[in-house]
Length: 61
Image 1 (cartoon, rainbow, N blue to C red):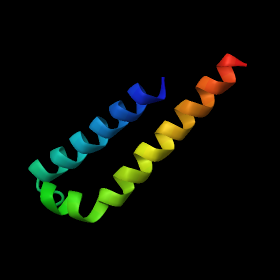
Image 2: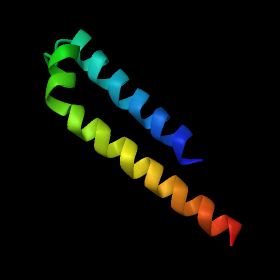
Image 3: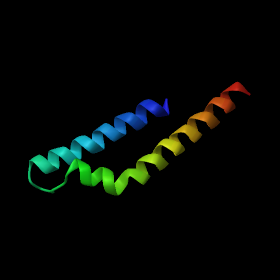
Image 4: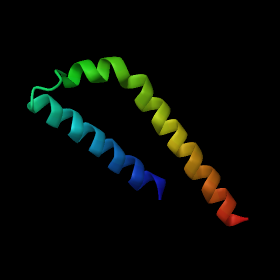
C-alpha cells in the first residue's frame, strides 16, 4: 500500500522539478540533486520499509 504511494509521490516530485527546470523557473541538474539529497532518499526508503513491516505485523495479529 505505502510502496505504491511512495513511488508515486517520488515521481510527482521529480516531474515537478523537471517541469520547473524546463520552464526556466528553477535551475537544477540531476547529478547535483543526487549528490546533495542522497541521504534523504536512504531515509525515505528506511522509513517506508519500517512502516510497511509494522503494518504487516499488525495485520497478522
